Length: 474
Ligand code: GLN
Image (cartoon, rainbow, N blue to C red):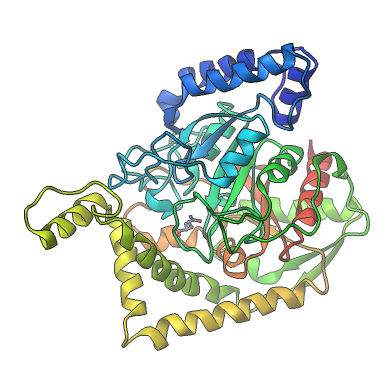
């Protein structure tokens, strides 16, 4: 099939060049061919998807006007609820958890005519940077199947990168959309906190979590966000979007844009080939008319330590509900306390337990001031740093990840090495701002991502930068 983006697919269906069923069968075929090896999907909703595609074809036949994403297949991360289907968040404890309602993002997609094709693998409860902590399976990087796809939205990203679906939803608490997008060579965006409703997203760190998308280009990114963003009465932290960037309005130039290059984003431990590619990309932006300015975000080194206090603290509280009584598989025992212990002990994996322990520790009476309160203070200072810099520049540009995709298993037993993979992305969630990763070339044959960041509510600026960079490099 010659149509590879959501915009192309929808228009081809409208112009009767292809039917929604043909589009769907095309992607189902690719999934059947490739996913045994990649392991991106936990479940493919074949029957449901066919029923949805059929409806679109009926609309075409009756001459009705088509909604914005009519007939576009989309995969959804396993922590985002799709009514009537299991949502396990990659965990054994939710193996039988069937969603009783659609997440708002999913409801909006359905209303826009998108076809929900299946749910994708992820790190357990979105804790991880490699998609290896899933209880169910390991997902492989489609570019090189001996490597990790990154995480925690590795299933959604691998599905797009392997051409098994044109668009997918992911979630980011500390970089889980942009980091895997960088490692697999596709577009991944985390919008401003509050732009996409978290209703129906299984919570990890509620003050950090945000749903975003993975696509093959900037236009599709703008389209998906147009559909899923907006204020929602079910999520008190959702906000009204000040200015919607519609995909039709994206520009292919950097005219009038100032880019800040944070010097702290080029650390010594960074892969030299990644550094070189990112520096070349910045040169390209400069030759194409963008103004480049060196800036400083001095608190960058404290972002990761602050994140690994705040996030486990919120996670330990959010995960309290998975106890076999309120949610989750209940271990059989006639003693109440033992049932709790067995449900949680057997239902959660190692990384989840580690975070629950860290989280309860930093929130405990004796340590709250020393850790949690301090981390919140640093959080405020990091936000202020960004606000100051965004008074001088429109967009920040730098690497998404300090390294390319690493070998499966390489960092699995070294949590600190795994945490360091997010060194350039956790600040985005800490400050609630927006970020997109766009492909900027290959190092050692593996994809490298360039990251654009913008202040809260300025998502349109990074979409425009992404579109212009794409036009420059394609
Ligand atoms: N890798 C980070 C973590 O393990 C971020 C995860 C995420 O964004 N969901 O917490």
